[in-house]
Length: 502
Image (cartoon, rainbow, N blue to C red; front, side):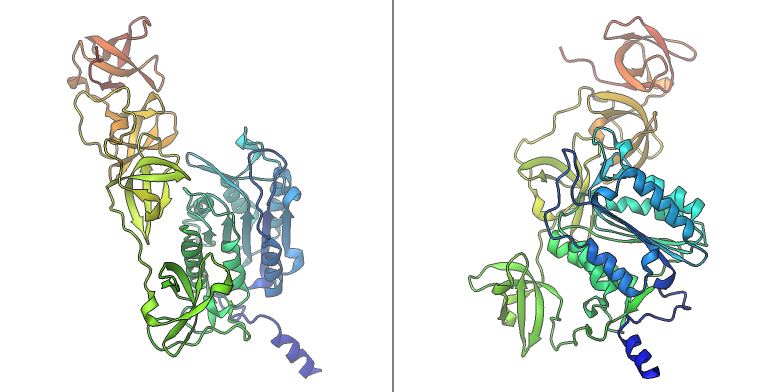
């Protein structure tokens, strides 16, 4: 009998000791999964690839998560009402020391700094019918009593889950992290590459074990997902860990039948992503499948396995990617065939964050250099209708008139990054704007009668053009260009602008 039990135990995944605070305890884990690949209404494209959410859930159970601790809402089951109800109910079950895993796969929706998960019955005309990412923290903070939280998103804008991690900052009883397929600003691939990488980690695939110590950690799973998304999907994927969530948190030990590849002699290792030259002399991003006698067996990404081949060292090189410069302007392909002027504001690991000129920042995103080209001669976004009378550099805390589409509003600069200004409008909305879309609010001493200004009317945040008739102790009397009766506007609500062109 003892021998039979031992044999059965050898078939189960091996984890670090459950009592180790740096190791996952699947038996005390609660998993909420909502995954949708098709929607009944118009506007959201269905996913055509073979779904892998079933395999993801099956792997969690194979790891030892009790079936009764898993809620799996699939397609039409994942309505807004069902997601809310089941999420709250499951959170209430997680006792002290438990782990909670939140996973969503489908379409993500974003507007300004808000992000929603497109439930099955979402109405795109009203985002209030979608599951708001900002709903997650209040529920867990009130209902869940556990100590470790992992949020996973395989959808557009899934990096917004990092805001939940931020909310748990300062709560030492909870160690939170997120692992999203895309940055909060970006759309995501329609393929299952990201979820596949998680399945590999949970299955104990030695390819994830970067340091070959026989254990797969959260940091290694994150790095594996990052590389899979970077090289296979040209997409920036990065996790976020809150206080106390160590990258060395052990998910499981490497499965005995899936050991890490043995270290090879020479530069290239199994699993490396490289540029490889095919028999026609063309270079492609590829992955090393095997190394033997100085040669590499290569798989060309995006091509059928029948083209896999052995190549010599002269046909393998590090991946060479075009570089962009922070602060420089380029034309960037926003959507296939649609190119717009943009400024690179920062870079990270061969990805570049761009601000589309003349826009409010809603579409700013991370791109690879192959989506950028030098701007065409004379290319420029349509100039704003109004321009500063006396332009000056703006800094954090400055009051400004800020453009939003064709209108202007009172706002405050909250940060400046490589010439792009983050602003908070007086109504609480936010945006990211270039210098041309901002005009400094003038001091009382700077304003003179006869000058043309943008000014707030009737105490509201929107600003309209007019001219200063006279100054008073508290403000200025403004003659409005649309013919509205002149009125007094308090100081702090004026921006001096150039005279109208005749």
